Image (cartoon, rainbow, N blue to C red; front, side, top):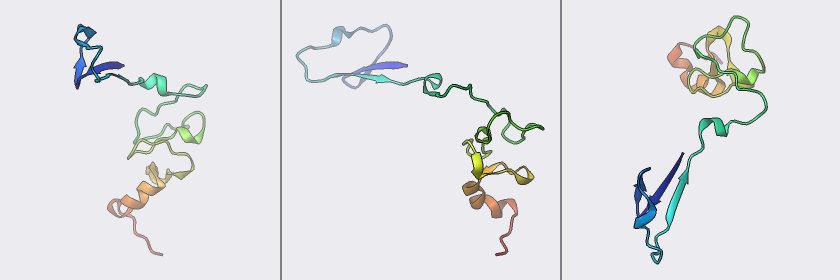
Length: 106
């Protein structure tokens, strides 16, 4: 996605740079936003978990890092708490444990 901005105004698709003054000090700004497909890296296709509140019976194929947190959607890895179907990152669980009903005894 690309946008051209001149004198604080976004130029639409039908507009041209005829209003551009070559002797002016104001530059033409080009804003480029890469799409989500352009930002992905790696050689394997990303495995998506469709419902963050349940995991498949046999687990997600691939590595442990493909599991997502149910709160933030961040990828888990070793810091994801899966017991009792919590599916939260360790830091997120520490913030929400009392609201869920867990009590710390030590």
